[in-house]
Length: 184
Ligand code: SF4
Image 1 (cartoon, rainbow, N blue to C red):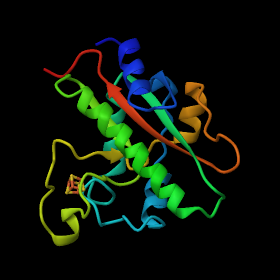
Image 2: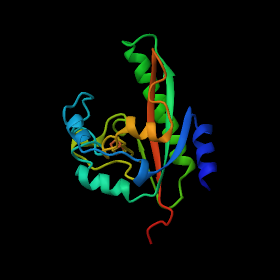
Image 3: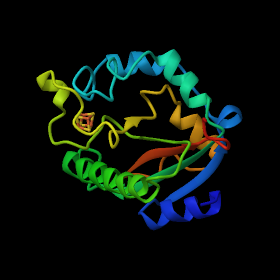
């Protein structure tokens, strides 16, 4: 599958818009995102195998992301009743997660890919990390752009994608990272 086909696939899976970037030129990374995760505003810090600190050292994760050549940054957009519409945000998060899962499943079997989404891994209703058990689906688990230190705002700008879509909307991002020559 070539880049144009993967982009179309993301749109067919429910993405609002998507754009390919050169990871090393247009991907913006910053270790400060680890501090933001550690502030635990989302309540997932230390509660999910794919979230900090369990997902790994941020410098190493940034290096991993930068070992890829190309990245398809995609976004989902949903409307909210108002800026306090928590249920609407949760519905939008679920819709984004469903879109990410469809993209992941459609690309299953392709070598040299890594897929990052938004927030913690949503595969299981309750991450086994909370019960001190290993990940239930290591092949399907998905980490986030933020956990890998990506500055999504500035990367989206470089990709030509809008970060906001106006009042009473919520926009979530994901990325399929691809190596032009998969590791041997
Ligand atoms: S697949 Fe399940 S157990 Fe593994 S990180 Fe995701 S939510 Fe946690």
